[in-house]
Length: 606
Image (cartoon, rainbow, N blue to C red; front, side):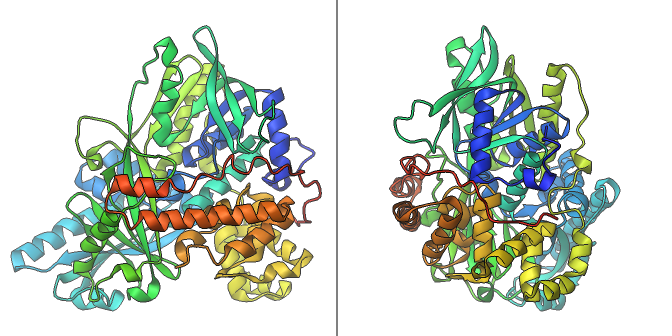
């Protein structure tokens, strides 16, 4: 629990100094719950447990949302296609969570996005059937949201004629469609939501430590009583780089690494109870000018569905759905993946896209509960919680939208094991930045005028930080240079880089350019033109010297080059080999020998 002498907002700052303090806590305290994994389910579990008054710690081998949770389609959705598969319980669950996020928990991060379901042209009976079939599906989607969704947060669907669809989406080919149905789902910056969840957990007293890898379990007889951890930022040869963390219950929310957790217990013959398969999903990013439209598209493909989603000044197009058995930390998109997406979207567009239109590419891995189906698209998106050994809980499967349900389920199991306690209250717990957001958005022009900044700057910050915007404006007041746009990415401010390093747990340049901002896939240069400026800003917060700053830049540029090379490779094997040409920064910079800053820049808490 949080020290009552420290405000919730101060306690939420994931600074380098806070990391050092939390490392000391890991070494010296015994926790009720220790969570392994800093994706959306792991940080959701840490928040759920902390909100119940438990003593909580979380470790993450890399960065918050470094894996699957930063590489999604950026949608908070009920899964329209699950209706077709008659999985009504999944739709109900997801739409309930969508409503909570959009109206109560994170209205500053989740907002409506219109999506068109194009109706394919053809003979009259087929056209009538498709409009009726999809119309009933979308209507049922709205009914589920309204009746069961606990606060809709989204407008109702609407049928459009061919002319109406073309007015809303001029790039839609008129000869292949007879109209469309417009519906709404939620859009989110997935990595920002995870960081906000992590900070909310920290604000309630959880010890949150990234760059801390679980390397083994601590056992007494047949009970797990903790984890052996390696600090990936420690100096080479540091005898304290590995240490033990004691906990009454360990929760592993490790996604596509779930099977690894069970293998750590292989010497005592523990069977995992489920298997997790990794399905690779690739997304392309193209400039807004490449496609003319005011809504997204959802298109049927031979294996799944394809989304074309507006994303600020860009479009996100994806995804693929293929089995992946290679490196799980850095899944690689191949030329075949890219061409597949282009082949699926181009028949619907008046001006076909080419590889020259692509600004960015990202690939992620979905953790699917393995079954008998050969195709990953047929595996379960439901989640499971098991206890393969006393004191160890594994949670896996599910989807991003329902992270809170997964977190509550696994913590419920932990609470029963610990002897009872409070039920989950996270359905009523707004995340940091959500309280007062509606009023702040309404009064945004007044805020801009009072702080002497442009209205567009305040809008941009409110949509990314909610009411925590005042903290970034305080940074700018303290250092006016931070009001400057970031080199190569003028839609972001230098203040956002400083804030990422000071309050959001960013330890490396890659953390900022890839996850705290999305510059790595929103710019044609993939962040290469922003690296030097961003590193200089981070250096001022984290105390990097010139050698460390240059090392961070070189690593990031090597990563960009490796990803570009992988995307020219013909298949998964060659793409993976090319991507592995750039090593992970975690551990490479461990000889920096830095002193932890003790005087952070002044902030005004809300």
